[in-house]
Amino acid sequence: MLKSDWLPSSHPDPDDRPAASLTEFEVLAEAESAEALSDALLQAGALSVSLEDAEPLSGERPVFAEPGGDAPTLWRLNRLRVLLAPDSTPEGVLAQAAGICERAPPRIAAVRRIGEQDWVRSSQGQFGPLKIGRLWIVPSWVEPPDPSAVNLRLDPGMAFGTGTHPSTSLCLQWLQAHVRPGVRVLDYGCGSGILAIAAAKLGAASVVGVDIDPLALTTARENSRRNGVEADYTAPGSLCSERPGDRFDVVIANILANPLILLAPVLAGLLAERGSIALAGALESQVGALTEAYRAVDASLQLGVWGRDGDWVCLAGRRAGR
Image (cartoon, rainbow, N blue to C red; front, side, top):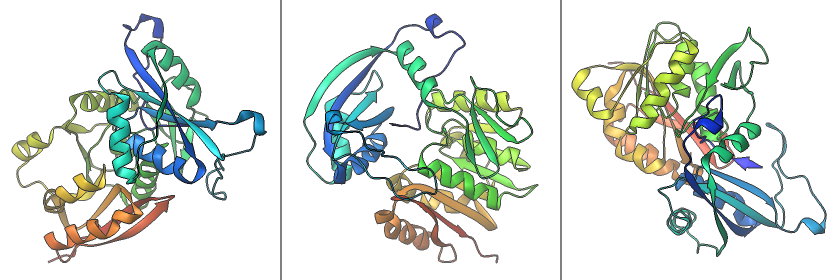
């Protein structure tokens, strides 16, 4: 199975794309460590991680459960195929992932270079329409299964956010429960724009997406145009200079725990009175540090775990009125 919330930009004809060399490497991991290592590799910057049975001759076993089903059981020994962008190295990404897992890095079993156009074909075959609540996430190269539904047409580019990762799915579920017509929404760390676009389609009066990556901002703007919605995408510095004093009824940030902690004064400061905030991209073990960071900034902002998906959590809270 392919685990990814990253995709290369798709074009009608991948053969027209300039060639780019991506790196794929393999490591082996036993069942008890494979899932954590896979998630850590994605946090460390891997474009995708696929898991397969490293002992295929021992007889095939089902692995991944359907959404909402029982927890899946991994193979006894798993082969992880990890895809990296041209500017990443297997050693660097693996070392960072091992640090996240707090365990020694496994030995790299194989490394190979692949053309990006081959990855485009492969990735398009791996991803199809995904239903999350009343939203459908539909890749731009696929026809919507239900044209009358709320469809988000998405071409992620090299930007985070396809809906397949638990943290993104949790955020989409939270937005459906909290976005009301007329609210002002801030998506901090917008990536592909998936959350900003969802907020707009759910009735938000205005939506602002923020990201430090210029490529993500470009991708998000393209996706908004594709979906026929308006959103303002900008860099963090521009948000402060162009919108001094702006406050938002809904603030959502799907990044990682450490940046969320560092951004506590910023995100809390952007939340309007009686506004709602959701933070995702953190693990269960990081909940305490996150809640303390935001309580230290504003004692009236009480965060709690709104939802869980495996080890991933979505924290949410509401600012009290004055």
